[in-house]
Length: 143
Image 1 (tube, rainbow, N blue to C red):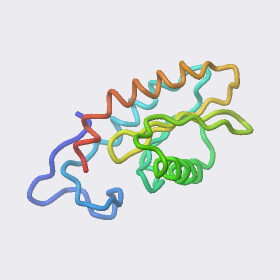
Image 2 (image 1 turned 90 degrees about the vertical axis):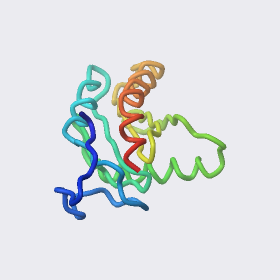
Image 3 (image 1 turned 180 degrees about the horizontal axis):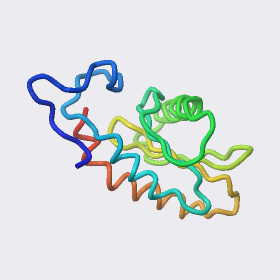
Image 4 (image 1 turned 180 degrees about the vertical axis):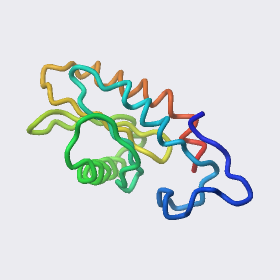
């Protein structure tokens, strides 16, 4: 499965877990999450990222450079808009080299990048929503 419940003593060290405000209720199998992201990498979508609300990259798939910078900047932009919106579900960011679609899932953010300006925005959003649907319950139960 995507996650498992911690036992008396977690096999995973504190240093290898993402830093969040509270202790996790379960541990995520990041390899499974990465496989789910990788399935969405097709013609037109070159990469997918999963990061926490503070911008720390947790896993990624595809061909992307500077993923740590992209996750940090995207999280900052998301938070800026989230502070002014009642419920922010999706964001599209047009960049010089392509476009980013971002959605929230639990305490995490999923971002997909397309370097093809002709790639339909609705299709990019549908791919992200498909990943959110697959990961929403498991990731929402982590924190």
